[in-house]
Length: 435
Image (cartoon, rainbow, N blue to C red; front, top):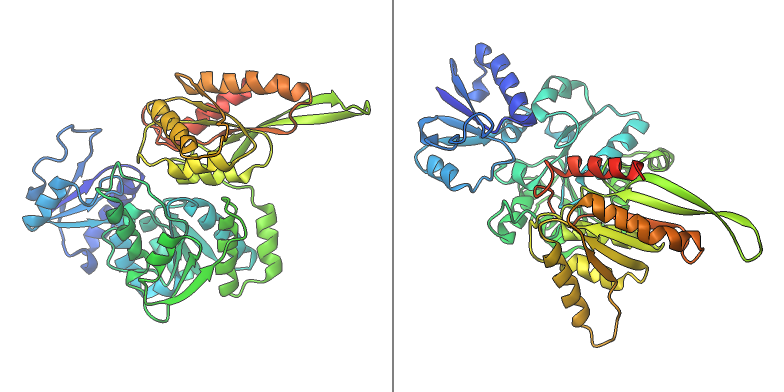
């Protein structure tokens, strides 16, 4: 039996470890014994996608699209294409009532982490796995002792998944990942699997004010639990975590305590540094005026950046740009148009002119003479941050502005200048701390 692990990142390494441990025991669910395992990854071989039809089964990593033409040809020739996610769900099936799956375009990590903390506050034994926490196959030995397993699931993980969790959560869904999915329809359809195979006795939670989210949830046969957020900001995901916790009989005091103590995740509206400037008021009273620098590098699409813009009421400077995953920036440009507090937009990266033109187009659509914010193009993140600081500091020091926010929310992928969004966020934080 010839087995291939396609992609050798965090999940691929976990899968190899699991297979090596399982194969000598000849576990029936794997359908093979004495297998020869091959690792296929671009890091080791530029031609790693050649001759996939020579394998009997291929385990695809989430980073490789299910619709990849060479994978399609392999499936057509009789090769079974699976994944670590599919393998986990098949092995965890006896414990499916413990599984809580969370998906959406943005907010998965925040919601999954906060829900884990709330349930632990309630005295439940919870395992966090998937895209955040441990790889799913690593936690299989511990499921029996757990009360719940919370899984953060991307569209790539569930696109070909033939099972759904007992409790499904669908957060905000908006256009994304068109660099990997062929069409938006394919992207949305991949999300449907979070609830498609649920039972009537299962439950699905969803944001009722998002039409796409609602449409996805309504395709599940499970009992529906619409959640109506009070605000259109990333903190709406706190409300979703609380709603699921209440369904699981958590006390309100435990829920509120966890929310109060929650500090958020790195690169997601993360306060990096506050610079305080002492300034005298007209009454000759000394007061501290703040400049907050916020790292939202995980905002890799326009919808996420729009939500970040709506979060702040203080005078705001936005730094954005990178590589486009989609070319519809309308969620972001509408938020910029509606944000009366936005003073400047500084753009860098591969798509800086594309975003600039999208902002101008949005303002030109209005018959009103709405003034667009000042837009400046810069070659890189460092020069963009330095400009934001130089522009804001004298206005803050003079008292013209108060409690200003410099928001880094790129609305784009990072691969034009960085390894990934985390590398980009860490670079931003390094530059901020040098100010």
